[in-house]
Structure formats: C-alpha cells, structure tokens
Amino acid sequence: MELPNHAKQLLLQLNQQRAKGFLCDVIIVVENALFRAHKNILAASSIYFKSLVLHDNLINLDTEMVNPSVFRQVLDFIYTGKLLSSSEQSSEQNFSALLTAASYLQLHDLAALCRKKLKRSGGKPLPGKPSTPGPLSRLRLNNQRLSSSTPTGTNNHYPPTPSEADQPQPQPDEGLRDKLSDDEMFVGSTGKNGNGGNGNSNGNLSSGGSAGEPDLGLDLSKKSPPSAGTATDALSPHSNSQESPQSASVSTTNSASLDDSSTTLPGADTCGSDPMELNSSKAEENHPDGPPPQKKSRQGARKNEWPKREASGLKSEDHDRPLVNGVIVGPKDGRSSSGVGGGSGSSFASDQSFQCKEEEEGGENGQDHSEESGQSDGESTGGGGRGGGKGGGHQSANYVYRQEGFEPAFGDNLYVCIPCGKGFPSSEQLNAHVETHTEDELYIKEEGGTFVKEEDEEEAEDLSAPVGPSNFGAETRPFKCTVCSKSYKDPATLRQHEKSHWLTRPFPCNICGKMFTQRGTMTRHMRSHLGLKPFACEECGMRFTRQYRLTEHMRVHSGEKPYECQLCGGKFTQQRNLISHLRMHTSPS
DNA sequence: CTGGGGATGGGGCCC
DNA sequence: TGGGCCCCATCCCCA
Image (cartoon, chains in turn green, orange, yellow):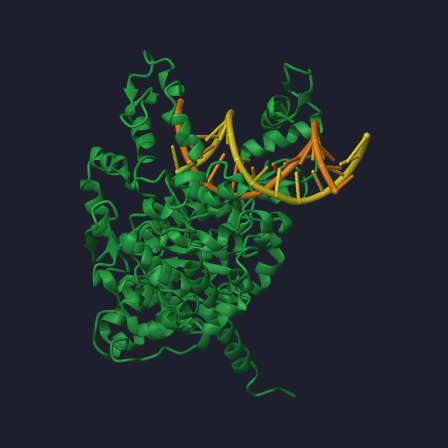
C-alpha cells in the first residue's frame, strides 16, 4: 500500500509553499538576494544546512561560493530534485558554479549531477575547487564567518565536526571531511551516489539528528548565561554548542550584505513570489501589527514602525514582501532580470504604493512622509516628542541609497546620492561616491536647509543647545564636532558621531529595510526580528536581547533599587523609571 | 477612570 | 564590533 506520487506531491506542495513564503522559517542571504525556505527541507538536503538552520533563522552564504542566481537553482533543485536547464543555466560555466555551490553547501547529489554534466561537456569538474586548500579553507572561513560573532571557534567548522555536541550526529565520515577536499567528499558521495551523498547525510540527520539535537533550533539564545540549568544549559557557550555562535552569526550575517541588500532588495523580485503573498501577509498589510513579534498590544501600539520604513526607500514593505514571497533578488542578478519582474513585479506590484512613494521621495527627497517612522513615528506620535518638527521628513532625506526598482526617473542609475543628486548604477558606486563627499559638504547641505534631523530631534536639540555636553571637559576631549560642537576623546568617536549629522543611514535592516546610522544598532535591531534573545535570566528564564536589559531585569529579583529620587526619596530599580518619576515632580500637574 | 510605579522593547550614541 | 547607558514609548498592575 503505497501512494505512488506521495513524495512528489509532498515536494510539490513544499515548493509551492516556499514560493509563497508559507511557513518558511529561514532566510538565506546571498549577496543582495534573500531566499526564504523551510529549515526542514534544507536540513534534509544537506548536513551543512542542517547545522546552520539549527541555530539561525537567517543565514548568510559566502558570496564567493555561491551567487544569487546559482543559489536559486540550488534551491529549486532542493525542492524539486531537478535542475532546470535554460540555455544559460546549462552552460558549463553555470554547472561549474553550481558545483562549487553544491560543494560548499554539501549538496552531494547536486554536486554529483553537476560533475556528470561537466564531465560530459568535457569541462573541468570544478574550477579551483578540489584539492586546493583554498576552497575548503574558505568554507571554513565562511562558516566561521557565519558564526563569527561567537567565540566557540572550534565548533564553527563548517562540516560539523564530530565533536560538536549539538551537531547532528556526525556521520561516520564526517570527521574526515575536514581533511578532505570538497572534491573528495563529493567523490565519495557521488560515487556512492545517494548513499554517500544525501543518503548519508540524511541518514545522519534522521538518526543522530533528531536524537542529538535538542530542539534548540528555536532557542535563539546566543550567549545565554550558562546557568539556568535547563534548556539554557545546552546553550551555554561552553557547551560547545554552536548555538551561540550561530545565532550570533545572524547578526553578523546580516551586516554582511547590508549595503547591497538594502538598496537592492527593494527592487528585487521575488522568485517564487506570488502576489497573493503580499496580500496574505497580514503583517505587512496591517502594518501596525505587522510582523514584529513581541507583545502584540505593544507592538500594535508602538508606532507602526513596520509599516513605515518605506521611507528608507526600502520601505519595509518592500523588504517584507519580498521575504514573504520567498525570494528577493537584488539588482545585480535578479532584479536585473527585471524580467523576473514577474516575480518582483508581481509581488511588488502589490505593495507598490510604497515604491511609488519612494519614487516620489526620490523626486523630492522630502517626501518621507512616513519615513522611517519607526522612530520618528514613534516619536512624533509619541507626542511629538522627538519627532516633531522637521521630523517629518527626516529619514527619507537621510537615505542616500535609493530604492531601486522604482525610480524610472533616474534611469539606470538607481542608486542616487541624495546630497548631490547624482545617480549610480550600483550601490558600490554610490558608496564610493558618497565617500567623496566631505563631511563638510554634507554639513553644508544640512545647514542649507535640506538637512533634516534624522535621529532624535531631542538629540538634535540637545546638540544645538549651547550648553550641551559638548562643552564638557573640552580639555580632555579635544576632538570637537564642527556641527554641534560636541567633543570627544578620540577621532574615531568623533567621526562616528559626525556621521549622525550626515544624511545617510548606511546600515539597512535586511528584513524590514529600516536604516540605521550604526552597524551595531542595525545588528541589534535584527535580533528583534529574529527573536534572538541571548541573555536569559537564571531566576525566571525571561530572555533579553541585550545584556544590559538582563542586568536591569535582575534587579527585579534582587530587589535592588539603586536609583533614588532626591525629592521624595522614592527608590527605583531602573534609572529610566526614576527619570520618569522625576518628570512627575516637575510637570505642572 | 486615572495616575503612578514596575517592567520591558527599541533606537541613538559614546566608549 | 559590542557593551553600556540614555531616552522614548508602552504595557501592565494597582491604588
């Protein structure tokens, strides 16, 4: 009793789901393209993926080993077992690239297939891949890069080493992998065919995998304190679990493709996309409640950050959508394939309101209406506190990178430098160009009137205030900001600060498109998307995205109230609450 | 219902 | 790059 097409149907369904982004639980970043997929599927196809998806929801692949178009084929292969063969795709070069990618991703069957193809065509198996230490080492590096943020160096090796506890059970030959060139590994797999390849990995997966891996997968903890005993134990940094590393990687990962992705993503097309998706993704549509996890209520209340990002050009939606749909292709590859447009087109089409806005903004730059809102919104809504005034436009103005894809106005030069209005065909060129602007120039622009305070207005206000911190300890802080006159101890810090006066926000969130002035902030922001809460309270198990929060939280348990109101003697566990309390004393009411 | 305190999330910024 | 701290915005609970 066996259904003949069961497996096939199942795959078909999964592939359709992938196209729609339905139940996709992992995002793979390849250069400036994002692909959504199902962890289970990836894990079942490659042990390498298995090790990655175990701890991360966002995976950044080494662009030297795989590019978006190749990865798309890889993904298609994983979900269909077929290698599509369009004219270009069946080129020797493509197979070579596929082989490299397959080797890198440990997709043995695919690698074997590519080899066969290459053999037939007489081409060399894999350019530079095999025995040369290069590739392998690169793989490792890559891995490490992925998990870079965390220490557990040894564990980060690419093919999971046998010793890694939480790794899927290393296959018998697993240990050898380190010593083998990719080629060798593949030879084995190919030779043995299914067995060595998938079979093998699968076998492991199923067996060792399930057993050996606690469902850490969801536990995004990065460095949860060793303690906790329970689940966290496994996660503890020392337990050579990779989790920490990996989850951490997420952040790094993200940062990796930032620049491009930001710009590109928006325009990107979605490969499997299905327009419906957009619609279906409630989050997006109702922005307000959107995607963000966390507390619903709060979220909703919270300034609709999600919705607005658009301003950045990336409009959150763009980003989101794409993701939802499944694949976002950056300009370089996919987008170019405007053709793909179908994909993007369709997908975007729906959101497009945004894009349109974008364009407008582009046009006037001022636009930003909504702008990033995230903050501004919050702020503004909040009572106009910060946002306020100029607020309106800030962000958009700040974004140097333009959304591409929707700006016919700029022709091929989709990346426009807002300060000077020049357009560039690629984000790299724009970046290079931006560098040519001297800080002074930028400031001048700002002062010229175009400048819209990006960050907190409040902040700005402070800055503008003559009495500001700027004047403090000028002696010990010889580096002074020419714009707000704040002073700093070292030039690097000053430079960092000065960037806050620029019109740019060079660090976009790959997920929502929100732009940030500092990479670290963006990375931190990413954690909220990914649910990474590495810091766990040993007492109650509550987890936090920041160490500081945990420290703060611990006072709840200890009862420590270090902050005292000088006016009424009230004590508080948190300084911010004391501040809030002080307002009560000072406010008219 | 309202105000105040406790607690948490997110972003900016400095070190 | 990450940690730490500040600020804002909220939510929840309680009086």
